[in-house]
Length: 357
Image (cartoon, rainbow, N blue to C red):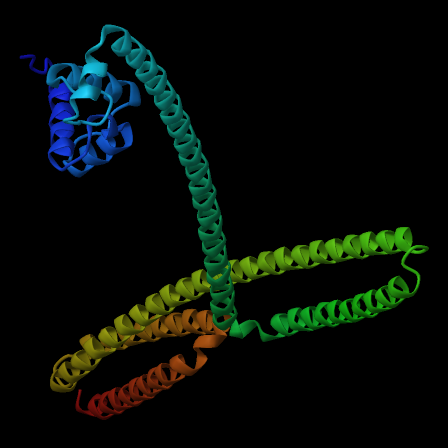
C-alpha cells in the first residue's frame, strides 16, 4: 500500500479521506472541496496543480475510480475492461485538464480582484493621508492665528501703530468686500446673460470668469503681501520692545549705582555725626583739633555737593526715575540742613569757647 511521501501530500490525502468518509464519491472530491477543507483544517490551500497532483496519487493509492462507487457488477465489469478503462482515463484526463484550466481562471480572476482591491486600498490610504495633512495645515493655521492674537495683546503699548494697521486692514477688508460684491454682482449678471444667450456668449463668459479668477488671485496675493508686511512690522515692534527692555536694564543699573553712592553718602554723614558728637565732648580741650574737624566738614560738604551734582546729572538723564529719587533728594537736603545746623552749633561752641581760652 502506498503512503504519502511529503507532508503536503499527507495533508491532501487526509482531507480526501474525510470527504469520502462523509459520503462524497471519489469523482466529487473536487479541487474546490479539497481547498475549502484544507482551510477548515488550518492548512494552506496551495496551488491547483499541487492539489490535482496529490488527489491523483490518492486515487491511485486508494483504488478510487472517477465514476461513482457502485455495487453493480455489470458496471464494475465495464470499468474493469481495458478498453473502457483507457477511454475512461482519457475522458477523466480531459475533464481534469478542464477543471485545472477553470480553476486557474478562477485563481487569476481572484488575483486580479485582489490587486484591484489593493489598489483601491492604497488610493484610500493616500486620500486619508491627504486629509490628515490638510487637517495638520488647518491646525497650523489656527496656531498661527492664535500666535498673532497673542502678539497683538503683548503690543498694546503700540496702540497708535496698531490703529494704523487696523485702519489699513479695514480698508483692505472693505476693498475685498466691495470686490466680492462686484464679483458676485458680475457673476450674477453673467449667469443671467449665460441663461439668456448660452450659445452666443459662451466664450465671453469663459473670458470673464478667467479675468475674475485672475483678479481674485491678484487680490489674494495683495492680502498675502500685506500680511507679510504686518508680520514684519510686528517683528520690528518686538525688536523695539527688546531695545526698550535693554535701556530699562541700563537705567536700573545706573539707579543702583546712584543708590550705592547715596548709601555711601549716608555712611559718611553718619560718620560725621559720630565725629561731631566726639567734638562736642572734646571742644574745650581741643580747639586746634576743632579747626581740623571744621576743615573735614568743609571737605565733606564739598564731597556731598559733588555727590549731589552727580545725582542731579543722573536725575537729568533719567527723568523716569524722578519720582523714586525725589524722596532721597529731600533726605539729602535734610542731611545738609542738619550738617549746617551742626556747623552752626560747632561755630557757636567755638565762639563761646574763645573767651575761656
